[in-house]
Structures are given as structure tokens and as C-alpha cells.
Amino acid sequence: MKPAAFAYHRASSVRDAVDLLGELADDDPKILAGGQSLVAMMNYRMSRPGHLVDITHVPGLAGIRRDGAGLRIGALTTHRAVEKADLGPDFRVLSDAMRWVGHLPIRTRGTVGGSIAHADATAEWCLLAVLLDAAVVCEGPAGRREIPARGFFLGPFTTALDADEVIVEIVFGRPAPRAAVTEYADRRGDFAIVAAGVDLDTGDVVLGGVGTTPVLVEDAGTQDEIADALELRDEPGVPASYRRDLVRTLVGRAREAASRL
Ligand SMILES: Cc1cc2nc3c(=O)[nH]c(=O)nc-3n(C[C@H](O)[C@H](O)[C@H](O)COP(=O)(O)OP(=O)(O)OC[C@H]3O[C@@H](n4cnc5c(N)ncnc54)[C@H](O)[C@@H]3O)c2cc1C
Image (cartoon, rainbow, N blue to C red; front, side):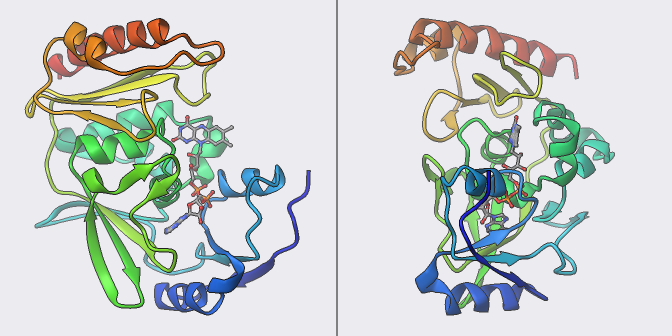
């Protein structure tokens, strides 16, 4: 499969990328990061951007650092880099969850910022950002702003990011030493049918695969109460009752795993 024709631009800085997105706005420009979602969609002609703005050579966008605000993960940091990082007990849930993201080659190229921007409702990064109440830092023509992850995901593959904004980093401000994520997919490496994240300290549960965005259940009750309250539709090959059973089981498993930490 081949993508439709597009023009390629290599951004030298975040400001350069923002300027390019503005200048090319009439011809559907898209940021290119790891390419693990975008290029596949272009090859299937599900996405036909007129321009790709490659940010992979922008210095300073990859890396993990701590400061007074918490843990900062640069947008170009790969899933694999997080998987291999020693984030300590406060944020180990992030590195532990990476084993659920696709296969090794995907984790080696795919980026944290790309996952958050792509906003697949079953993506582990979207679930983690909501569970840990993270902030998405982005830069646009008017400068930088922080968008709370809990208000960032608006619908299927739709976010609060403006078309001329670039995600710069994700800030995890709240330690989550008793948080865990688990999920079920038919084959290892596939996107989850249902993913569940829990934080025993806040009582919050976040579910992937049960709605068009990650579903946050604050101060959640029992796993039966959580599962029974969900509005689920039958889908080809995945009846609502099956998905509900998965929620019940996975929330229980994630809580067990978190209680052992
Ligand atoms: C076979 C397969 C299995 C996979 N399994 C999983 C899985 O189990 N779980 C999972 O979470 N993901 C999975 N993925 C997707 C993978 O995690 C991607 O890495 C991720 O979705 C997108 O990151 P990327 O860096 O590749 O972004 P790209 O594909 O380059 O971009 C994706 C979208 O985000 C935009 N974008 C990228 N970076 C930025 C930025 N900094 N600012 C603004 N917009 C930006 C792009 O314009 C594009 O619209 C899978 C992919 C494949 C091919």
C-alpha cells in the first residue's frame, strides 16, 4: 500500500513546527513523530495529509526528567525508553504498563506524545494520563499552555489540541505508588479489548475500550458496580456482556496487583 502524495518538511524547532502548521493550514498538515499510527493510516488512505511536518529532529523533545512539578516525559520519548527507565516506586506504573503497548518494534519507534495526540480510546498512554491526572503541555502560536488530561480526550481520535499546536511534554504531577494497569487482547501485542487502570490511593479507576475516550470512574465502587453501570453496545465479535465481564475481571486483577505493591 502506498500513501497519497504529500510534501515533507523537517522542523528544526517546536516554533518552526508551529509556524509550518500555520502556514500550511489550508492543505491539512500533520505532525510526524514515530509514524506508527499515522503512516499506517496514510498507507490505508484513511488519512491523506497534504504535508508532513517531521518533528523527530527537534532537539529537547525526548527524555524523562523530574522537577518540582513531578515527572516530565518529553513528547518524543519512545514507549521503549519509558519501559526501560527506572522511574522509582512513585511512577513505576508507567514503565510497567509499556509491555502492553504493541510489539517491541512499535514500542521502539512509537512516542508518548504521538499516542496522546492520536487519542485511541484503548491506548495505554491515554489511560495512564487520565488515571494519574497528568497535564498535556503543548505549544501553539500564542505560546505554551497546559491541558489537563482529564479534559483532553473529547471523542474518538479527537482531542482539545488545536490544529496548529504541538505536544511538547506530559507532566505527571501526582505520584501513584499503588497504581496498576492490566488488560486483555485476543493476541499479544494487539490493542486491548478492555484495559483497566486503578489507583488505590485515590480510589479512581480508568477503563479503556468501553467508550470513545478513556472512561474515568472516580471514587469507584466494587468491580461489579463499575461493570454494571457501564453503557455498552454489542459489537461484531464482542458482545456487551463479554466486555462487561472483562471489566469486572480486569478491575479485580488490577486492584490485586496494586495491593501487592
Ligand atoms: C501493529 C500495531 C499495534 C499497536 N498496538 C498498540 C497498543 O497496543 N497500544 C497503543 O497505545 N498503541 C499501539 N500502537 C500505536 C503506537 O503506540 C503508536 O506509537 C502511537 O499510537 C502513535 O505514536 P507515534 O509516535 O507513532 O505517532 P505518529 O504515528 O507519528 O502520529 C500519530 C498522530 O499524532 C500526531 N502527533 C504525533 N506527535 C505529535 C505531537 N508531539 N504533537 C501533536 N501531534 C502529534 C500526528 O500528527 C498523528 O495525527 C500500535 C501500532 C501498530 C502499528
